[in-house]
Length: 248
Ligand code: SF4
Ligand code: SF4
Image (cartoon, rainbow, N blue to C red; front, side, top):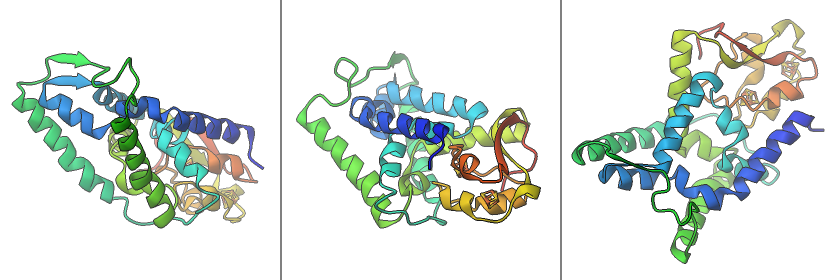
């Protein structure tokens, strides 16, 4: 049975998913390109920068606790729960040329000279006409739902997400400077090797191995706490400290 904290977490990401049609443009990788070409800082650029800043202290907690794509994908676990262990590099093949193109376009526009958080929205809402409704559904099904069915659990997060690299970079900077931040801790001596944590990890990480190596830092860990709340031995915990081991 789910612990209370996991019920709350799943509630957060489900509500976030229901709000996705309204906030879609604030997470858009396309609008940031269009706005940058006009020298405009739009809502999604602001949100991506906030994700990067949050990761300096909270790692990828956004992915575990807030992201609308998380709500959609975890709702699909009961239909398709294949684990994913490969291909995390793929999202960097998307992210890198995308970011470079944004920088070039912004430079071509003479830099950013205007902030319009509500760029291309209607009264702050994303979906306001048939075209945006169709675009939303294509993105939802092609990038999020279909990969979850065809490839496996949270495939979008592993392979396609253009937001995750901002947070991975933020976390790497935190690890490099060794400052205190939200993280996982472990007590290897308590582990009875039941595999429950590994089975429950929505990101398909080898959590049991991480516990027994006392190396809980992982670029794909979204700090969801599923392992913390499912371990029968309380061998995993949240804490706020400095990284005790260089990340894998
Ligand atoms: S759930 Fe706890 S006891 Fe079981 S393998 Fe993971 S850390 Fe060890
Ligand atoms: S290791 Fe634990 S906190 Fe990290 S993604 Fe897996 S279940 Fe969530």
